[in-house]
Image (tube, rainbow, N blue to C red):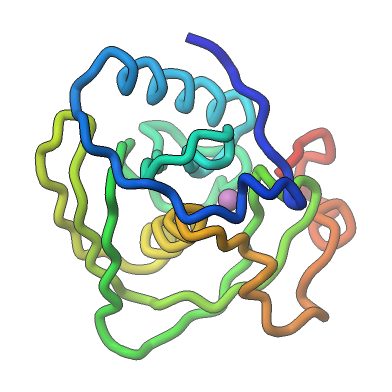
Length: 179
Ligand code: NI
């Protein structure tokens, strides 16, 4: 297992449309996912998409079995490996919420997301995942899956008065932490 370098905004590899995963439960895939969890844990991320470590595959991980210090008030999202995801918005309701991204360190912005979604896909073994979620869980999934279509959250910011440096916006937050 290994911690990988996380690509930062400006790297063209973050702008690609990721390829679907076609082989499941392989040693290669298990190793990749283990490395991604290591990388996410070290960075205190809420989620991580394969393109963020330069791997051009439709693979995202998110969730944790413990409280994330970057999002101490957020409800727990189950630890999930999601491949080849498809998101379907349920209803028109859109919520604004603060987001950060490990590929955009030191910044936060308010991003509109669908309040309630259904997401489908498969897990590491190729077994189906089908969940209906809302709130923070829905936001995290939409953020991570955006990475698979070359979208970074600043591209979705609508009000740039609500986009800035974490240490300025949220001085109470652990200053040593990066996004
Ligand atoms: Ni991100």
